[in-house]
Image (tube, helix red, strand yellow):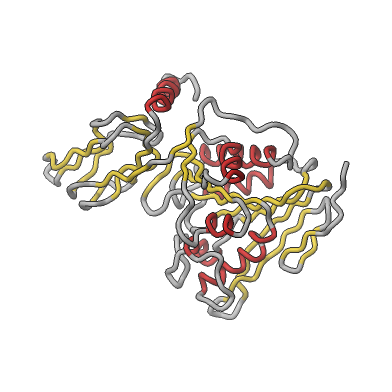
Length: 338
């Protein structure tokens, strides 16, 4: 066994091989001049290996990632870990305390990286995370849910044109992998630019701990650890994995009371009814239909809509992939697994 000899230092704390440390990164100060700190758990293996970071609640109301990291740290044995796992269950503490997507200065942390030590509150939090966590890592996984009043089917998002990011994305084991570099100044885009391939797990709704999505996410993180040879074993592979390069939000044409006709993950055909809007008297106002065949990867959860509101996020696989997805979907609906 090759023993890791160099200490790992984060926020001034040295973590030796074989140690587990709970540290806090100072990111800001409260109105009462108390430090606002970001809690981080560092698990250091005895053997040499890469460093992987996990971040949750970059948006403070997206909680499934908290459940994923909590379960991993409580239940996953790390006796044979190689390298270093840096887990940040609450990355955006000010927003998390208010169960809010944004920080008190009303900025979006996921549009602020790599941040600045002299910038706004949001920029300073981004800077602290980027300097202490991202730049000390070799790879990263950022855990998210849908925002606002929406919900996402479990999916992995990554820049599939980057070989290392693509390899991580496929190893994670989500059946649906969505291509994209990420928004400008998002964590994954800034991390990749800094040489740290980072992927995003998107699943579920904000302000909830959703056990099925937590289990998928936990399994995916373990798969990546195995892919990187940080844990023994091979990643679990899904029966079908589809890479998606074309998605669009289908939007309401009229306001009204919404009746959804599809569910997350469902395959739909072109022209199939997605939703029906009615006025308060119950008379039909607008039937929204799929503009093309595809897979539902996101849905609004609000029953009341204005014209132009995003209703259904529809991904567009190839005809052959959609046929295979439909076959698996029908098997699941029949109780035969997925």
